[in-house]
Length: 146
Image (cartoon, rainbow, N blue to C red; front, side):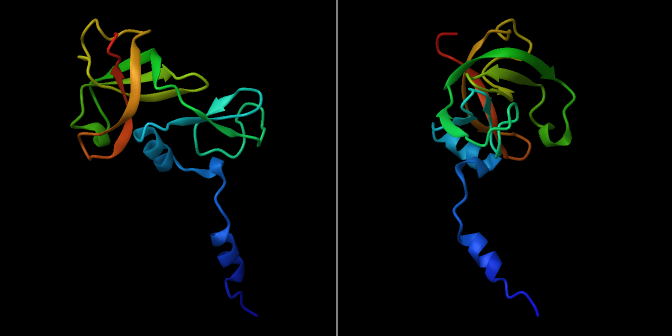
């Protein structure tokens, strides 16, 4: 006997759990101003894709709104980029605290060599494109008050 694929059809019609969103879907939500973190009952935050909390293993994850602003925790100025960022260099990669999660992105709107770039800098989070290939990425920009 051969499998007629009926099991595959049932799987295809099963709704995708909220926690199965992929990175591109998460970027789309962030770009629409609806960024979110996946948070377990213990308050551990993570970003998609996730099915369980990476810290405690809980599968009870909820979508909590992601802070629209955060603070730079650390950064690095990249002068020798990978090929995917060749036309972007020099650029700044930063880790930013956004509440229940920290995420990495590129800082724009600040000269990479200026003193304006510092740990603690308040930034807005959004989505932009790499100059090299137009692919989307997380972008941080100094807040108006910074």
